[in-house]
Length: 252
Image (cartoon, rainbow, N blue to C red; front, side, top):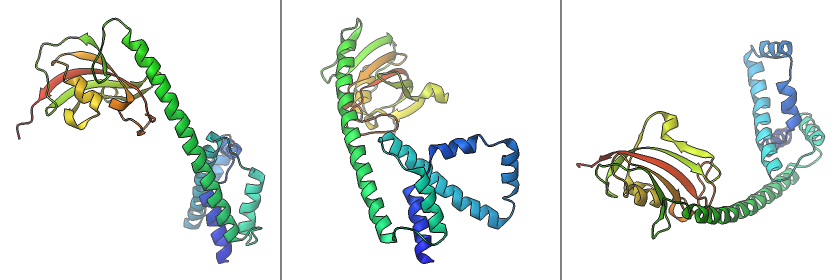
């Protein structure tokens, strides 16, 4: 009995499922959905369903991960393994399944690392081309560090120091135009110390006077470098439009 429960746990962690199973779930008729909901009224039914659904969630996540890496699973054998485990008759021992899973995880990690290396180099190449093209545009200035900026609106207020806190509105995009952050979308400006942001921001915003709006193109080495954050992948060149609303000097 312990071995069969362990086998179920192994299968759930492995995350075996089919995209077709999700399609079937989403195309279920309203009548079937209502019947299913009605069948979950007792604590036993809800617990039982939760166990099955949690396995499905693991499965969906794993399947998506494998598809992205050009790997796949045989879904009929997945079902066979699941049913065999429930019946206490798995065709493989727990030790064999653990070894298979470890080997699979190692293969996934290796493929992920290889894909990340390719993506990072592609970002380097694309960034260099974008920076070169942008630098040739009229009105674009390139600083000694490689930061590029264009004055969209010239303000008349004070310029901040790196130790100042500033209030800004901004929008950040990748070089393909994909937006990854925006105070405009949130509906309120942001405030932060200039010495606690990426180097391109620290340098660039100090060039601005209150009331200014600049466009910055920030090389990856002045942004997040080889780190990934959210939708920003390693070695990404970033584009920001920034409005400097106020310089908030820290009085403490």
